[in-house]
Image (cartoon, rainbow, N blue to C red; front, side, top):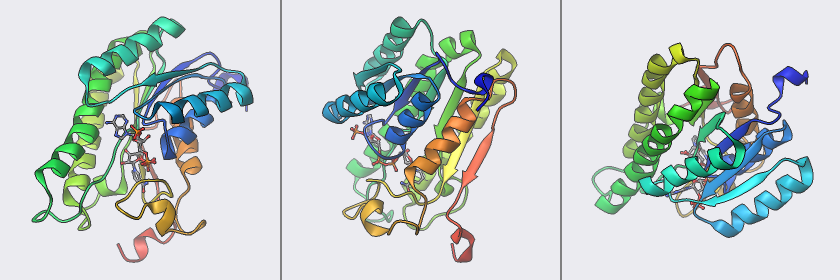
Length: 245
Ligand SMILES: NC(=O)c1ccc[n+]([C@@H]2O[C@H](COP(=O)([O-])OP(=O)(O)OC[C@H]3O[C@@H](n4cnc5c(N)ncnc54)[C@H](OP(=O)(O)O)[C@@H]3O)[C@@H](O)[C@H]2O)c1
């Protein structure tokens, strides 16, 4: 890859870095030379990931145990990244989860958990990062979903959080584009990760059946490395997605 298309020396914060798409994204960005700040609640997982990133790519990987629903913790996450690396070039808003399925039987607790993480967490991180991204003319990447683009019967509240995220991202883009900030939404369909209910997508799907997290990470890296244009939205679907959705 030509040097001007790599992420050498850039500082990237990734939320939800402890597994799945977030963990693979940390690898993908560090592989292109970025220093990464790994945020999630499971600190041990982050430590392990940081060790393997530093050993494999020689870039810095900072462990930042963070609950994205805690706005002060999210502020400290962004401040810590800026202190450590002298600025912030990339934020990947990836932390997210699904709980329950139908509406009539969804508990208030599960409803609040999805809203707190997928909506509030994304807002807190974006709010904290934007002043720094304006300074660097950086890249803001959101992990949306197929469920945020089409009506989904399987979990309407989860789907609605992703419609919110997309609406937020595209509207933020209309506000910060003039300042040189790129805003991208990557919308995957099913990805083999720990995502899911009692049976995770990793367990439910065989390899090759749906998308793998490293494919989504490659899409995020593509969006993050744009320094003139921006990738506004990138849809990454399993090949049979339109066969019966
Ligand atoms: N897998 C799919 O089929 C699929 C499809 C489309 C979109 N997505 C989206 O992709 C993103 C990543 O999901 P994934 O598939 O990689 O699932 P995953 O393996 O379950 O990863 C979810 C990540 O979110 C983090 N997280 C959850 N609650 C958090 C909180 N309160 N504070 C900080 N981090 C939190 C988790 O870390 P801790 O538990 O350590 O905090 C974990 O690192 C999500 O936004 C999801 O909605 C997934």
